[in-house]
Length: 66
Image: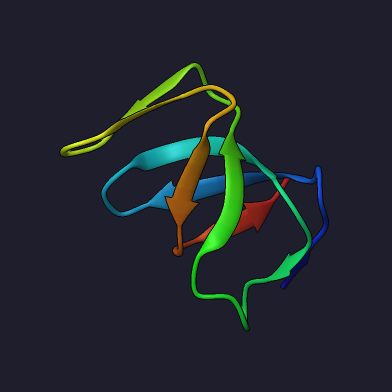
């Protein structure tokens, strides 16, 4: 799936849970290993790391276009 820069996507990540993110640049989910996403939610708590709104969040699983 092609995602364009600035496009809002929903993510259902196995460890980080469900959140909303914005594409930092154009990418193809079929070709990229890590997706360049910026968090739109106020905060996501991972096992060892926390991410806040506006911060790049590494992600590779289950991206859906809104």
